Image (cartoon, rainbow over all chains, first blue to last red; front, side, top):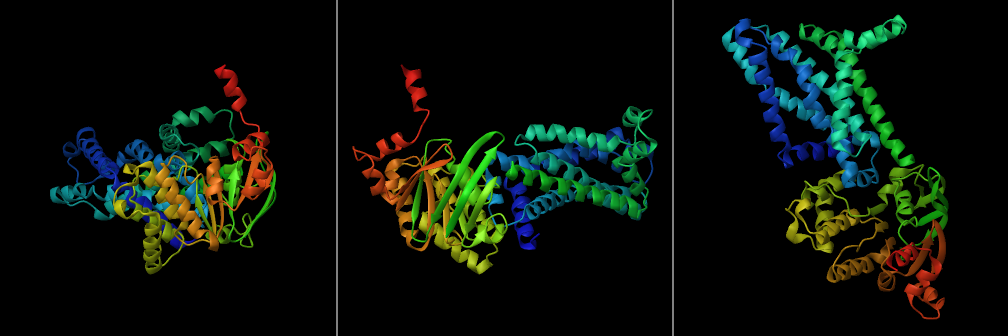
Length: 246
Length: 247
């Protein structure tokens, strides 16, 4: 991997969000969704507690639809417009391009997440929350967004159709979100060995995220999201490499 | 500068390129001719490292394309079919991106962009988004991208396709101006182009080379002395189907 190339791809991709209305539309909808879910469905005021748990509790569910909206274009669009051919014939490795694009999308998701800071101001104005817990929750939420993005980036490389990329990513992310839940586990329980059932349930984003949301950054949760991102980005490189071998 | 030996590419059971061997030296402008689907683009995609060959070897400036892809790709300027570019960028942003990816320093990039812009006549549209440009300008952005790093090898897939006669003339002039210092391959199915710019013509049909020589040598093969007739005699196009459908 070549840092110069990663930086060049990152800059192109990140600037690309702001070259079209995409970035602004996304950020506005992201913030409206975050706010309305927290205040209406989460009944933030009625709860009367100085904490942001209801706010963060909605993140996995909102990410489920909002993150695939970012990731769907990452590679599908390059294939549609033919720029993939241009990119792959420049003297850079596929890995540099994959990492550069992923980091740009992740930074953009981080920016949208960071712009929810009025929530943090509000809760500090109304009471005295544990800001350490809020900070780790933000960190955990961003890590989780990275997990969803890596899955979406890999799926986007499989197709040149953004709608297909979106729908498939939502489904796969849904399975990862709730894999600790009975909807998924019941399917495996009874016939699959217990080790497998445990393994599947340990892939749950919800379990790992709620652990971080409690204010404790356990190294295992960080490693979980980190290795998941690495795994899917590696698969992303393999998918693109297979396309040239045909 | 370009050496191709026994190049084969299969897609499933289809053999798109079936054993092509070629050498292109500095100063040569090789016109790659053939009907649609003959394997011109596939061959170019393999030279530039986008597709991996099923069999055979390609070296560009002494670098094996499969084993030393970056060295080979650094020596190549490539205009893919249709001149793809990022539609949401302006030509300046796009060329700066290409320069950065190719590892040019800021100063070198600025010089390279100025030169490429001047040679392709992009001055008037530098700050317009590429998606708003006409087909001719889009093609020129692609050309500017290909010659940006002044590569010793230029591969251009249908560089004049869809351009008006004036634009075609300008592109051919540009190719001729660069030809002394470079090895150039252009694909085309416009036969007059071969006469206009190429020092050598290779006709490919069904993945195999069926003729290789200077335009004059190819013309000598036909009693009518017309390149069209040489082309038609050597290649099996689906033109016959069209005739049947029309009758």
